[in-house]
Length: 576
Image (cartoon, rainbow, N blue to C red; front, top):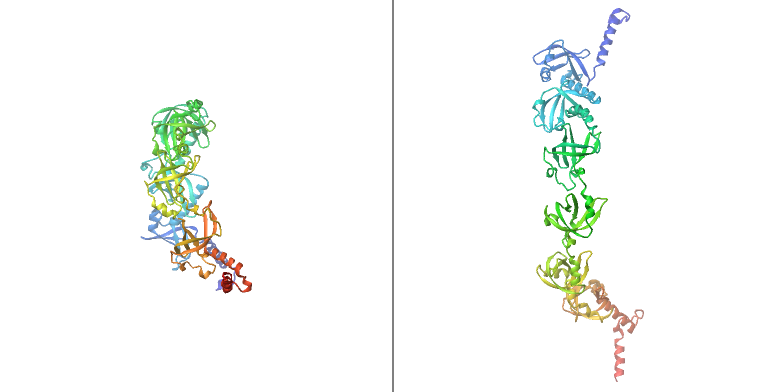
């Protein structure tokens, strides 16, 4: 302890200097940082490092260096960069990693190259789904090369590119996941771009390119090679004034054609051309055609919404589905025609500004609805055959006219339930019906069956509201009574609430069916075909008459039977 007695001695100052230097070294060592160690011992399995400031020697597995290709570093005196993971683990040892240090150092270099937009050196080491794996030569970091970024043109075989050092462009970095995506195509294109700019600048709109060679097709157009130095596109719509489904209908690979330059995009380095604009526009001949006249047209393309036809070569028109037939709805042009057919059509519209011509096939035939109206005006009776039916109507074919007349179930009968009556009729049945309505513009014809039969409601023509009638109970249910007036063939329903004044007596179960009872007409409108019957109303009428005749409720004589004996005595005296 004598060394601390006098701090001014040379020994005390030397000790203080050594202690401060030790603390400085230790302060620079932090977990998660890359440090450099010197190899001071090598065994068969481990490499021991000396790092000033650490309590113990960091140890590296020699297999880790071997997998990294750094086995030559396993020599005494060599320096190795490692990642300091733990200053002290549970066993009191220092944990370091050479592979993680290499990956971090490599990632830092990739980030730097990406931010500076500089290419990196790498080599393709293997193929994976969707592309290839590229190893960064400087750091050994692995990156993904998409198949579309391997070259500027499709390559079936890339064996000549495997393990060859070459430049790649970093196109994407995911700093969170530590993933990198590279492109070889950008490097190749960058060399060609400068040359392509000079080539594209040679062209201007209106130039004619002589002898361009057909190079390839696509669904949207045809590609031509100009002198082997530039590919230009002729869009599908610029191939011909006629409708073209695919370029192979017009061109063959290797053919040569003259092209007219119509667009030049110096930013995208693209040149657009046209073949059809080098020939006269057939739409100029539209003046040779007149509206509402019949012409022969050729079907060139069938679509779900109609057919494209040609009045002459290059002069296309649209035949819409709605103009195919007078009577068939939602009919497909594909079922009526085939490509190459020549059919009669009427020109219905010519729009020179929009370069559009509309035609109609159905106008070449007489409108069957006009024919029907002339032959069978409203209120005439005709016979028709049931050709189809659904849950609420029947369709009838009248004579040989191509029209399906509409017969609603409510127009089948006056007597029974409409749905029950509908079920009785089958396809093929013959029915005599009355024409109720003809709408030529809407292409509709409505007919009725019950209108050909006597109307049971005519029984009520001489009746009036509140009049008493006699009915027979046909059936009962929880809702009320089904009754039929005597002399009438039509059934009516008396609701449960209209059976009696007293709610306790308003029970349909009081009746078994077959009884004859009196009721009153509560509502009567023959034009609207509305008739309502009520037993309760009749009771109310009779009660009012009784009260008016025999007294009032205030006197207590609220029933006609209370003075019945007096009335009988008066009657006897008159008879004597």
